Length: 159
Image (cartoon, rainbow, N blue to C red; front, side, top):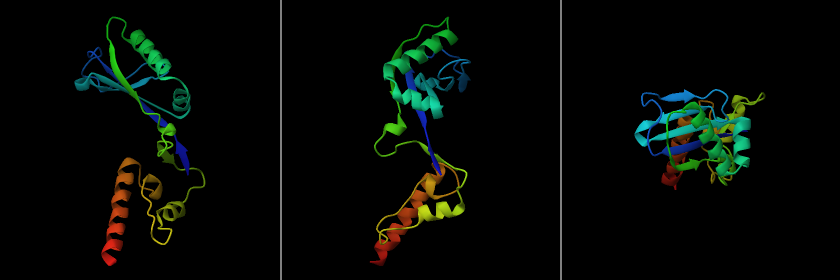
């Protein structure tokens, strides 16, 4: 298995300056080209992964925001807008996550998932998360959390 980088940059503006019917848009040639629109919150969410995410995480917030605002002004030249606040995820720098998702490496097998899902340490440690099941990502992480919670409850009831 491998571990990947994906980050979100959330920008909230003083007003909606893009077409409010847009759910997403793409800015050709931009450093952060893909935006998800949340017009009710006057927000845009930029999602980046891989090399772009690693480069962004190594840079200062101010540089990232300046770059995005420059690209937005180029894409929407006839619209004045003010950034009110922002948030940047930086998943690989978090002390607990250290990244944002796993992926199937070339030699990943079903046995890998079974091994990661197995109890260890005299049934004192239980593993949940997308890496313990072959079924997906966020929904699988949630489902495996429920799976392990049930195991823990069964162990507690047995004692």
